[in-house]
Image 1 (cartoon, one colour):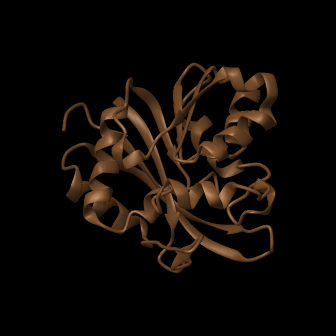
Image 2 (cartoon, one colour):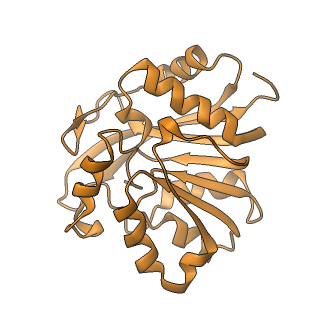
Length: 215
């Protein structure tokens, strides 16, 4: 995946990345085509895009290659971020790297698009979910887009040794509406299958939201 939400604590995720090549991790994508399609369909190269739990993902590289000029990557693992920067070389200076726990992060600015490929499903209690969604609401400008991906209702029950909460798109929309009332409106959804480096299939869903002018 495009990095994880790292809700097992920083030590858990530092250990997960330390000594392991990103290409060997279950969430690895050589090219994040679905994420790229969803992002480029909604915002242009001038937009501010933040990748939540981006870790060592290659999404930032791909966005820069398409001319995006305002890309940020947030992750709790400094090891993951360092690996991404090392891979990107001089291009890494074109990305804003943010080492933070999303449930304790206060956005310093507003973005046009929030992308999360596999963070939210690690938040299994309402407190963590509400903190995440509050940060998402504060980080997005009115009319901004959110892409939240998670394991689908028939996806894995755990990942990287941690439990997850699985969602159908309808459940995701209900959770967002319940925890941050009036902040977002649903803007589409779908399903996809991720094939891990070992060939295992994982069922995912993606939910799209628009930030309301108030709420």
